Length: 330
Ligand SMILES: NC(=O)c1ccc[n+]([C@@H]2O[C@H](COP(=O)([O-])OP(=O)(O)OC[C@H]3O[C@@H](n4cnc5c(N)ncnc54)[C@H](OP(=O)(O)O)[C@@H]3O)[C@@H](O)[C@H]2O)c1
Image 1 (cartoon, rainbow, N blue to C red):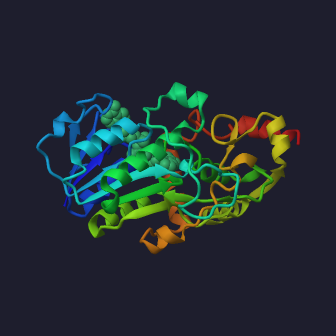
Image 2 (image 1 turned 180 degrees about the horizontal axis):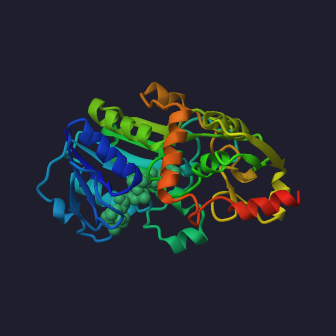
Image 3 (image 1 turned 45 degrees about the vertical axis):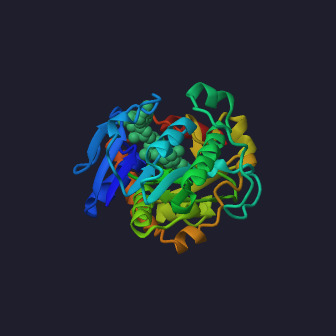
């Protein structure tokens, strides 16, 4: 097949392009090339999707399938649909579970209420002012995809994506922390978490293009309680750890943030989002998403952490000094 990956220079798009090349497909990646290289065997066509005529470099090209990872721009999605929607046989749009309106309630399925759509181009500044903007742009983008190419579209509402190439430092915090062993500060919570390894998500997306899988899915693995996940990660690493559980309010009082960012405990969900990572993975698993073992996922995340440098300034998590100070004065 000839596959167009709109993206392809980093993380998920890169992994999709690499998997498609590995299977013998002809792969064109369309991006600026600013984020990195495309995988060996794929061809980069430089485009700037911020421009109205940004896809001009692809005029005359024909594709069997498109994979669009447009993060937060309705305009990017619409222009791509205008350019290639009619000719291709299969279209994947990567959306997010952030599209759901109420992550504080137990989920039903992909029919759960969504955020109000916003057909705009999101910027960092706008996202700081409106935390729901990312999800709202994803909703508008999904709607554009469904309206233009619905019967041949796969919409994947991805959950937390982990593994090689992850630049958010969230999941990776735990393997690198747990492998060090000792007393480990954890939130005393019972909410569920779930993740999907980038390699498994990419393989499923390429499968879908090959097999014509369509529909809307939550792209997530099975959910489990956060503390069970951490215990299982420690087990797979053979790490000798003692969990020191601290109540969420006390962590907040001491300046520790949930989920992500500096001085945080990654994957801990705030009350308002306590069901965000408890979505039903069954439809995606039935449609072919095949999660690798936790040991494999953890090994991939830990290798990636080591490549980035364990002692780097992290985007998410506690520094060893911060954790030691918090543990010293429980
Ligand atoms: N990470 C998670 O845990 C998570 C969770 C849920 C959903 N998602 C979704 O999963 C997807 C992840 O995608 P990803 O990892 O491949 O990459 P990404 O970080 O979302 O970047 C997307 C691509 O856009 C390209 N790009 C940026 N500006 C551009 C421009 N002006 N013109 C053309 N291309 C441009 C980048 O390449 P250049 O800079 O080289 O142009 C890059 O290849 C996104 O849709 C995200 O919303 C992620």
